[in-house]
Length: 214
Image (cartoon, rainbow, N blue to C red; front, side, top):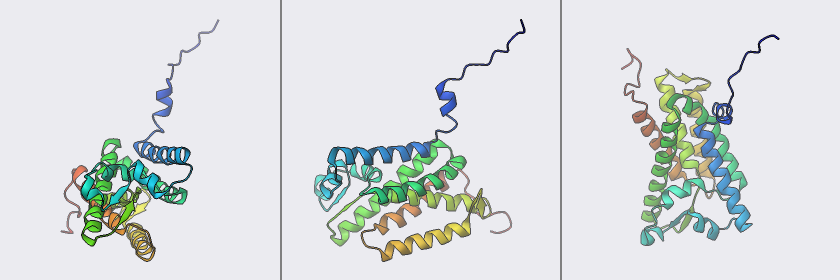
């Protein structure tokens, strides 16, 4: 009988690993949390958002529930809110993760989102606003800021993302935010700047401009 070549057995982890990225895990967490909220409450109201960990101002200045600065970036008010953020998160995150790796992409998400929420807290408290705020948009804009740094270091383009297109997207996104009601523009701007700073530090290359253009 002819000998049969033995193929090494592939575990489930060997099959899933190439397709499972940190970005997809972050998207999955956001989606699971949203549907858990929907299943348990049937309707997502302000009180439900408060219960699950949204930013609640000005009460946070009294309760000191600082964990909300993190939990709020995994909460969404409705399905369109979730889908808009997750689409951008997936598109930008997958590209940025190929440059930074899984650990650093999670750090950009968490630190950039945290910077956005801290800035929101400071602004709303200083202005005396009474608001409930949540969403991953600060972290999404952190990915945008990270891609700005990456494209600049790649002389204007990294994979399919160009610095010019990023600039147009940033301007349009910020404009739509400022002309729309109920949008946390502070988190967007702060997340953008925070993500750029975090990526600038984590990527470990401090010379943005190419040689000869200093």
